[in-house]
Length: 290
Ligand code: SAM
Image (tube, rainbow, N blue to C red; front, side, top):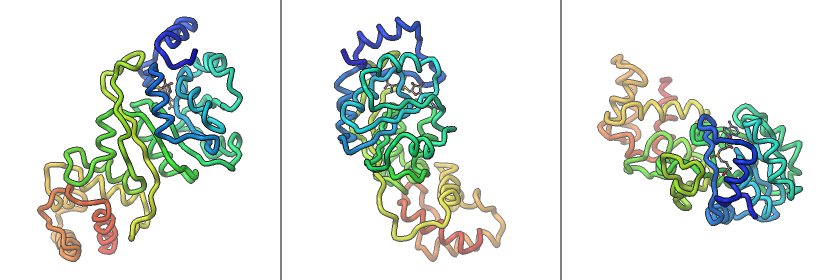
């Protein structure tokens, strides 16, 4: 019987005397259809190596291993190591690394365990408390990732996929969509997890896209501009930019010049600007030395 169903999951937890650790975002998936749909959304085949974050007791890992060439999974919880040894024993194409994925040298582990001849995908039922840092880590990495398919809190999924003018559109939408095309694949109700999380979830796919027609010199600096422009959502762009750069008359004059040049209305709310608008705004601001 596969790991990912309610009976086997409860039996495994009982056998090892495990209770899910809230502090590590442990909510185990127990629905075979959801697991298969995640693997299908990621279009996993023997051409693919998969990086998984947080295998838990191995339910998603197992379904990935059935389709992929190799699965490299990072699990922070030492107590799960002997469980995974047993549950994933039938598969010889899985490597579990007992490390915090945010502290691990992922490139080094990839070099060690993956052969470089396969496509690379990231598939995970993420620990929700660190969804954004994990996504940012993979987006900033030099790994040749073709696609990420990840489960997260529905509310975060909405922010990642929101378009200008949407209620959920904000700095996270821009920072992610700057690099990736994002799409909600499907929603997942809380009842398919043990224990049940307090929130509903969704599977999001993220695919790297080509560079924009203009790009900022420095990603981190660009993100600072974006975050600053959204510092106070209810304020307009002009007020947020003054918050970011200062209210000195000389600075105000520079901001005015930038906005005039780009034909952006200072009264506009930041959530009306597209990713490309923000890149142009950022580059123009830097030219003014702000
Ligand atoms: N993949 C399993 C499933 O779908 O049933 C478990 C998913 S559970 C939502 C998240 C998993 O991530 C847990 O196993 C947890 O221990 C692990 N985890 C939490 N923080 C982590 C970190 N910083 N690095 C690696 N794994 C982590």
